[in-house]
Length: 231
Image (tube, rainbow, N blue to C red):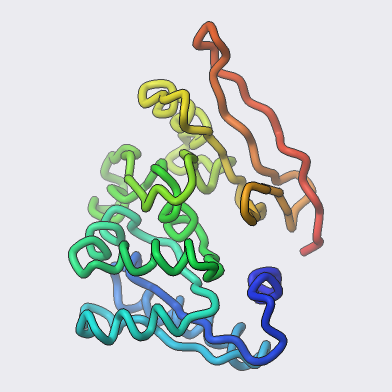
């Protein structure tokens, strides 16, 4: 988050907007909001606003005012499919897309990282099944601000099924030569500014991986040069 604050270019207090739409339970919603407020307002001294209450969406005019006032947004993880559907229903997707193109800084984890991309490899169905019931990953279309397909938690293995292999499978099935694939390990992040993309990590073993196809449609995976910033 500190890097995002620096990228705003403002020396004075920044306006940070938390967008917790991906949280499907009141407990996780409150935890995400309080955690972000603790980090950004109490420890870093920034002005923090929350876009909406749990299951209580403001008017279109109020949404627009909050988004236009933001120097930076933070979008925590959760059900990315639910989040994108809700944004489209309330025109939040268009508001955020416009502000991002105008220079607003976007920070986010998991679903929040998927949202600005062309599409993401999502575990949304895991939020809609009972514990121990089977589920599979789905494609979720993002805002298309960048020609990327990503998966967060690339090095994770829920239900003892490696997420990287499932992303490779989906990327191959959905292959579009105009779309670049990236896998983001837990503990690592992509930092995108203009046409430049860098990777940072808080864990030496974690990184960001470029997933692509060669001319013979063979899957290629390469670790991007990653800067270690410590834990």
